[in-house]
Amino acid sequence: MAGFKLIIGNKAYSSWSLRGWLPLVHAGLDFEEVVLPFDGPVGVLTPAIRQRSPSGRVPLLEHGDLRICDSLAIAEYVAELCPEAQLWPSERAGRAVARSVSAEMHSGFAALRSAMPMNVRREPFRLAAGPEVQMEVARILAIWTECRGRHAAGGDFLFGGFGIADVMFAPVASRFRTYGVSLDRTAQAYVDAIHALPSMQRWIEDARRETWLIDEYERVGRA
Image (tube, rainbow, N blue to C red):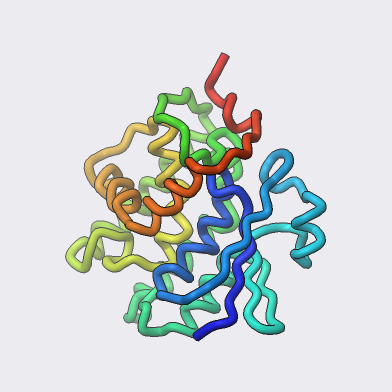
């Protein structure tokens, strides 16, 4: 299957780009990758991205004449094209819960996103989090605990094998590592499993080779 082109932002900072990229990699699709760097805070529309993406944001998947502008929609599209990749759980109840927690991550946790922007190339340090961020962290850890408790026998990820739910939470695992969030054994094992993925290691290696810097995200936690 050919003809895929994925438009993304800086690998160091763009959590949504990571979410769009992982499903294509794990489905084994051959795709062209185009990086359009941000020239300011992630999410601020840049001319190059505006010219390419109908939504003015990344990721954007181009497949023939089709353009898909949202990371979760990209993941769903890939899951339909490549059912053998098993990006959703095989049984109905598992799929329902996986879609629920994926949608919750997709639409929520604004305080955590703001206080802990993704920066995969920073060395870990402990960031003092306010009460709203702590509440969101607690909710994420509760999701991980419940999913791993039900599906640990099937593998190292939220529903056993790696899937779209893990795609949605992979940038959070990165944030928790960067900002020194205290984790219990289950959550730490999950964060370690995400970072042990060859795809995640490749993304981080690529990010470390980038020369673009956004000062706002490099200064978080620094006096």
